[in-house]
Length: 345
Image (tube, rainbow, N blue to C red; front, side, top):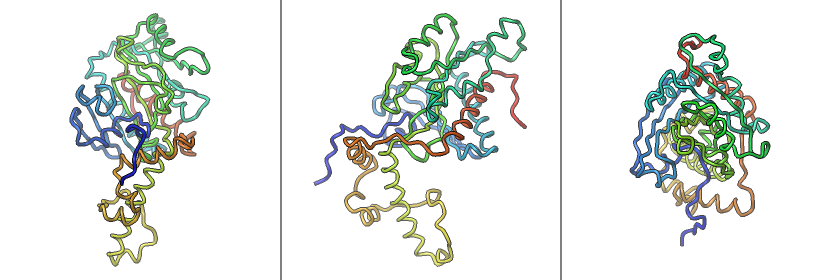
């Protein structure tokens, strides 16, 4: 008899649409287009109304930019350019004109490093509204406002309510909100930027749901930009089991090759084309090897959640990485919004 899952299909939480698309490749209700740059992979997904309920994401455009180590300067510059280009293209697709004013919001808690992406990104955003009032702005710039609203635990005010008062007063033409996300994959942690025109649920990635910030409520376009900076323990365990299976299949294949006897290390087997046969999984893991990816994640979640060990985890280098990512996102927003800013040569 197979193991019974008692969590009603709930999987480890992810804010990334691409995680859910990957798990539901055979489902209909969305279109997917993939483009490869030198060191960046961009996946454009359009979730239709028919596919929205299937994967639990609002209908709309989701742009996922995947990259390697952003602390490398060349990678950083490429990610910046690609992000700015994709953001500008999205703004054009929803008819945002070059004269439209923008309210940029950095969501999150600046006292908690993994959640400080939004507030830190605001530090790099070019704010121009006060210059327009002084008449000191050259052509090629638009009106921009920026705010770090803090978190409800500090202000006592629901973030959406705070923003509503400002939007009603300032009356921007559209909003861009930046926030840290949660990932459903270890591989995408701190190596993914998601841009979407569907808005955002602050805190939803760590099961701390706040009111939705979207065009449905504010009646202006709301673009959300986020990076997964945390992952839960259930995802780490589930992914590790999968890596063990891939490593086992890779080593088994290498043993057949005479050249492998001269190898000192196995290298990064995740970058190799590996076919993991079902019998390999069973040989390595027994009954656990017969589970699908979804069943495996559900099982791990079921084991860790009741005892309180499904921790939210972030890498040890998070301080430096968040500083780099916030710089990239802040400058990407600047390049997408203003024509008079040049890229580094």
